[in-house]
Amino acid sequence: MAQETRTDTEALLSRLRRIEGQIRGIHRMMSEDRMCEDVLTQLMAARSGLDQVGLLIMDQHVENCLLAGLPADEGLRKLQAALRMWLRFGAPTLPPAES
Image (cartoon, rainbow, N blue to C red; front, side, top):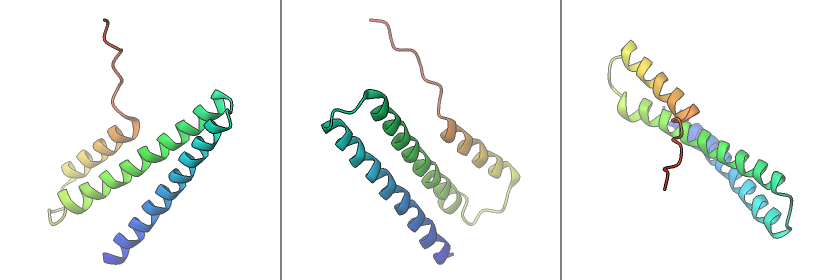
């Protein structure tokens, strides 16, 4: 189990390094006055990367902390899958409040 956790952590750190590089690239693009479309594309890619890291960390938390030591109950697994789907696709956004 410890080896699996170490491998998972290394994969997450690799993803975070990739995101860090994307952020540095966005910074460079902004200082070079690049086109807004290009900057927005990179911002969306970085945001998606962060969302995926968050999803993986939440999934590990549910598996290793919340469900650890509990019997493999199908209801809990379905709840975990539902939470994973919710985090992946996000909550619906509300329209801005009218002033």
